[in-house]
Image (cartoon, rainbow, N blue to C red; front, side):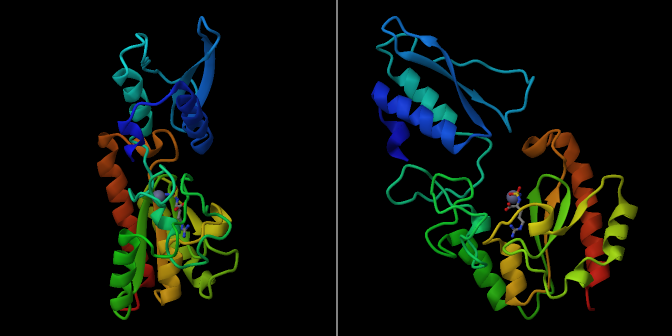
Length: 265
Ligand code: 0X9
Ligand code: ZN
């Protein structure tokens, strides 16, 4: 958005601090660190993943010299720009907040409990189902190939889970027990030392409507899974490169066991 390419009044910056801390409570914390000679509040914004405690930090201050306006502009820009982005990058009408959660944008109980109609929210469902080019592209391809696609896998991270439908309702999928067959879980356990939780999304994580897995399932792809890869939270989204090989081999083994257990051919 162009918000970050303009200079702002102190009032606007205070508003922005408030909004940012409210919109991203797990990542941004506003800490009152003192006040100016003229008694205006001085805030530090603490950026972290899930507010994890006892982490080493980097301090950045902006605006020690009043006439150097580009300096506070950089601080706002820096906070906004983050490795921890989730959504796509589409601008939304009437707000400076960017992006739709693509995994809330599919037409499966779209935008009910577990998704948000607020464009500033991390789980914003978008203005209507398949409003985004990315979800449209996936949905169009699956629609036109649904006869030949037997198994649908959506790969995410993290938390080591294998999620079956539904996440968009607490109802059980019609072939729930087949999807839950012990063999699948056993196969997985046999292959790797890491444990993967296995079950229906709405049971083992949370209600999350508008996901691609549920949508693909309703389209007729009855073996539909979401995979949450490594790890279980030690590094979270920042899985170090040295873990890529292990995580991929593990996922490959699970893909193979799913194919083995569920493919009708
Ligand atoms: O919430 C999500 O979209 C997925 N978890 S993540 O932490 N990678 O964001 C889980 C998706 C499960 N399936 C559906 N919600 N349909
Ligand atoms: Zn994800």
